[in-house]
Figure 1: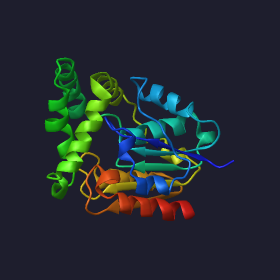
Figure 2: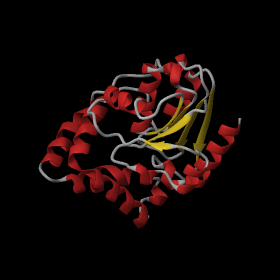
Figure 3: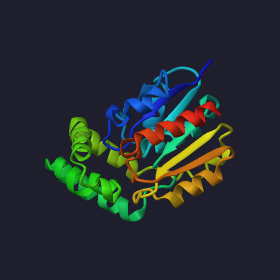
Figure 4: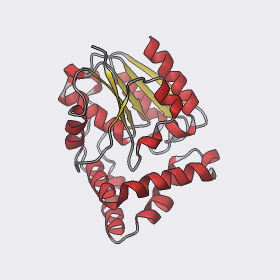
Amino acid sequence: MAATPLLLPGNMCDARLWTDEVCAVLPGAVDVPLTGADSIDGLAQLALGAVEGPLLPVGFSMGGIVALRMARLAPERIAGLVLIDTNASADLPERAAVRPRQQADVRAGDLERVVVEELKPHYLAPANRTDAALLDLLRRMALALGPDIFLAQSEALRTRPDQRDVLPTIDAPVLVACGAEDRLCPPEWHCAMAASACRSELHVVEGAGHMLPLEQPGRLAAILRLWSAR
């Protein structure tokens, strides 16, 4: 039975994260929104229940964190793993300290300001930070999900477990990819993740920051195509 690709988006992203170029190389892929729970364990359980049989989780950022948890909870179902601009560690103390203030601002009706001023612009490579269409897409995805999803995802990220011990246990191919200018989850973190996996392949893509699927979709699609063929 062929593995079903599961598309797991990032924090405050929806299916618009995955361009036609990327979807074309993942036939039969199922988009799984990161909604319905306020913990990484809960989101992983929901994703595991979305489709029966073997899975190929394709996780971007927060989606990669959920993908790792899926591999911990149900390793027998993981036929492969794609981790894009993500992080296997627990929340950094300085980021965990900021989240309650951001949550309070969002509860007070300030979601758009938090997204536009504090989060999304800093995710892009410097050359892409003036891309009005890209910035508007990031804003629209976040506003479409709304404050309740922001609060649930923020809490899930704040309380997530350290998962650096998961990759060495995965007996399946692992693709690790990131933007060369990712400052949120820098390339050295991805090098460490790839080095800890038994069967891994690492790609660091120029011209992209944290939002590799949108900053360099053609390059990501080419990487996925070659990796899938191998």
